Structures are given as C-alpha cells and as structure tokens.
Image (cartoon, rainbow, N blue to C red):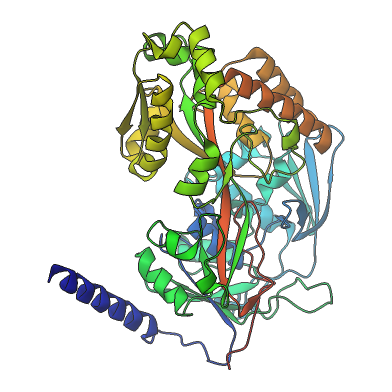
Length: 552
C-alpha cells in the first residue's frame, strides 16, 4: 500500500513538472525555430558577469558576453574582441588590438540602437571588477596588475588599443583574462540599471537576453549582428535561441531529458547513474540509438589532504607527520577498482601526480605517483616503526556525506593493512572552515581549475599561500619547491615552464602531503538531433557553433 502511494505521488509530481514546463510564459519561441534547451538545477543567481562565480552563472554569461580572448577546445588562448596582442620582453605589459566590428546588443539604453565597443569600455569593465564597492568575487584575478595612486594599470591608448601592466611577470595571465569576470559591459547599462543589471544584461555575445522568469525559465535569442563567423564565412551562431529551465529535482530533469524535452544534460546523478552507464563508463545500450555521450578530461582533482605543519599540536600528535606513513596510505588502496565499481569508470585513477589530465603542455608520463601496492605499504609501515600496524595510533579522516562511500571503500582497504582509520562526517561548509583554519588533520578535498595552467594546481603547495589567506590547506612547505615555483613564474616559454611544473609535481608526490584519488571527467549527454557540440577540460559551455535539426 505504501509503495503504491509513493508511486502515485511521484506520478503527480512528474505531471506537475511537465505542466510547468509547458505553461505559457511572457515569450513563446516559434515552433519552427531551433532552440537549444537545458536544465540548470542549481539555479542562476545573476547574469552580471561580475558575479559569475559558479558554473550555472558562467554558462549563461558566456552566451551573452565576450572578452578580449577566449579558449579553444584545447584550452589555447585565441582572439575574441582582441584580434591580436603583444607581450613586452619583460613579461609585464600586455597590449591588445581590438576589432572594429564588435557592437553591444541592440537595447533601449542606446535609444533602441547599439554602440561599438572601444578600448575605454574595457578600462571601465575591469575597473568595475576591482572596485571594492562592488565586491566582485573575481577581483583576485587582477592582484597581479600594477597599481599606482590607487589606480590599476588599465589603459586605453586609443579606441582600438587596450593595455594592461603587471607588477611582475605572470605567464598564465592570458588564461585569467578568458574568465567570465573579464568580459566587456556597457557603462550606460550598468549605470542606469544598477543592481537590476543582473537580470537585464546587455553584452556583445552570440545570444542576447530576451526574458527571465526566475526559477522557471530563461530565454536568450540569436544576436543577428554577432561579429564571429565560421571557417566558411557564415555568421554565428546557428541556433535561434537558448532556453534554460530550472528544475531543482535532478531525477525530474533526467526524465525530461529522456523524453526529449531537453537537448543536453551535464554530469550524472547517483539516482540514475546505473540506469545510464555500464560499469565501464559507457552509455547503456538502451539509449545508444537516440542519445550521444561525450567523455572528456575535466580539470578537477579529487584528493585527501594531510596537514603537515609540524608547529601545530594536531600534527605533533598524529602519525601522519611521518612521510613513510603518508606514502603507505598512498600505496594502500586500489584506485582502479574504486573507479569501476563506485563511479562507473567516470574519472581516471590518480596514479600520476596532483595535476590532472587536460592541462596544456603538461606531460604525465614524466610524473611518478602511487598505484595499488599493498606489500610496499606494509613495508613502509614497518620502516616507520609500526609493523602490521602494531602501536599505530588511530587516524581520523574527515569528509562530507557525498563522499562517504568512497572514503569507506578506502578505509576498508587501509584497515586490512593494519591502519585504524575512522571516518568523521561533517557538513561541507563546516569542513571548508576547518580546512581554512587548520583545525582538521586529514580531510577530503577537491581542486577545480580557475584557469588551465599547472600553476593553478601547484600554487596550493606554495608556502606563501598558507591558508586562510591562500589555498595551501596542508601547509606544505619545501624550499626547493618554492624556488621552482618562483622560477616557473618568470619563464615565458610554455614548454620550459611545463618541465619545471613536472619537477614540482614529482617533488610533491615524494613528500606525500596528499593522497590523490582521481582526475575527474566530464560527461555530456545530448540528443542526436544536436550537432557540433564540443567539450573542453574547463567544462565551459560554448553554444555559438552548435547546430540542431529543425523540428519536423
């Protein structure tokens, strides 16, 4: 009886969701138009690029705005509004030459017309990001920029030439400029609309804002005057519109995708993981005729962090202060089986350092790491003075509820070797606070790239970046590593710099302040009516070259 009631309630919920999706809104897209539809379960808090701090906001902002540069699918910087640029010999001055055919979206703010983008617009836009009154979470991007008399070194040399000067060389800087925070906005719209700019954006992108009923639907329509073209000279974008729904329940969104009411689904929830994927990570045969699966590296490293600051009381009392114990943990569990049976082979077992696959120029073949080697783990335990784990104090691993299954799997294998590992489950926000305040000895963490350079990963082991001011949660400190980090930041040649990064990653693996679990992967599901849909390791959503079959 209870089961029948539950089934009935689920059916009612699905029917209610379907009715919400089909209800008329302020704007109805003509049925003969190609509309790309996807769901954003996390919701969108703002369409103002100054607050593009999470994936949901970034994906929408990327359709509406453009910056100086952009990434291709291999994460190489490419021209966008800047047609070309030069970097001074000292690596401090970046001079950008702008296109002269980029216009803001037609809007009443321009008396129903538009206006060409000029260099002064970038001066305004970037100064807006660093303005403390705005409190943009993207202000950190410009910490490297020279500041004189309280003003950042952003300059319009003329209408088509924009310049930025840095305090010191920083080779990944072009990658930072590709972030959504760094796009151009019109001062007229921002100044007139104020806080309302978040829901009435005006940009230059391939799509322009049409309507947003928050929590229900967001509609963007084709920018008929967009400046980019394809290799044959055809004006982009190909799609007529983008429609974003906001179903919070991921199971309901999955059902809408399976029914063909959504064109795209990113990632996979545990509730339907086994329905969609085999243990080998392949698409279930029942869906192969109408759904396409893309898998690609994702710049996210999942790891267990170990506090190694010997001045802290919690470290002085812990066996994890000993390098051989940390190394034994790294050898002591089977990452291959973990990925196959707990994650349906979504992700790559982390046996090659901390830097994930997908970073340009980085060669993982040159990196040492840890694979499953229980005999080696036992040997290290004995060498540390704890043969078979005898006399070894208990070790507590702190995680949040989402990772309990992984941690219990690892715990079981460690305890078989003689460890006494216990698991403490803590809410995510509490765990982050404990990590930042050095209050937890052994913790689960992840690092998602802000920009595609190995520096972004290795910076979390640089000693000046001790938390809470920086991201060095383990308080790893190594003089040789710090010298290599500084050397890399002064090396403009990407290939040479990558070699330095590889040396640094090997050093981290040897000292073992982390137990690296896996390098994540993107899963993107699309209907087979969708074409030219690409993936990239930053998980950016680029719809300007996507095509969709015209509805029959």
